[in-house]
Image (cartoon, rainbow, N blue to C red):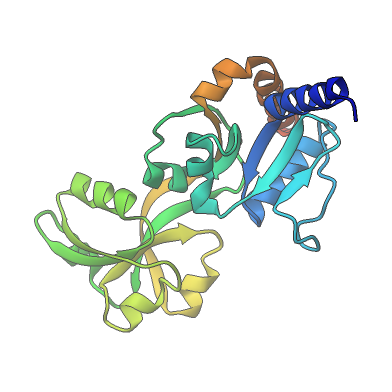
Length: 241
């Protein structure tokens, strides 16, 4: 290959790489609902993450690809430039801290809520009185600490990464702070929801430096998401009328 052709090929690769937008998503509910939103405005992922072992998925848009990462890693990838944009839950975002991230949209997907749950028969009202002390097991220490501090309750936090319901059943903790969707897991393990902490939904997050360098393609993607979430909102308003 002639030197001029090599230089041209390298330049084309540089242009493609620097115009490409990477969208970080986590497998599961956020991926499924994000892809449904994008599909409603004509953006389609070319591979099925359930059958493909690929972690970088192409789309029908030549300048957009999807990066599959752990849910807790989405803000980190976006913060440090591994992806220009991502979708992450409010819970993950609070625990991460949100440094260096622009948050243009609440996508209103993957909705659930954070709650305090305790064993049936546990006197939570007495234990959680102002000035009281509780041992709380949670995957979300920042949220739990802030919530109980606001109530004037002292807490000893134990961070766990899964099977939170076991903590009060084994005497490891008095109660847990965890995400609740249907409440069936709590019920199956003889726990009851004793206090609502906050509502959770997924947010669009953008690397602030990338927004300055790739303003046009990132703005187009933000507008695509904005258009997608406006459709169900409009339908809901029409039903009310």
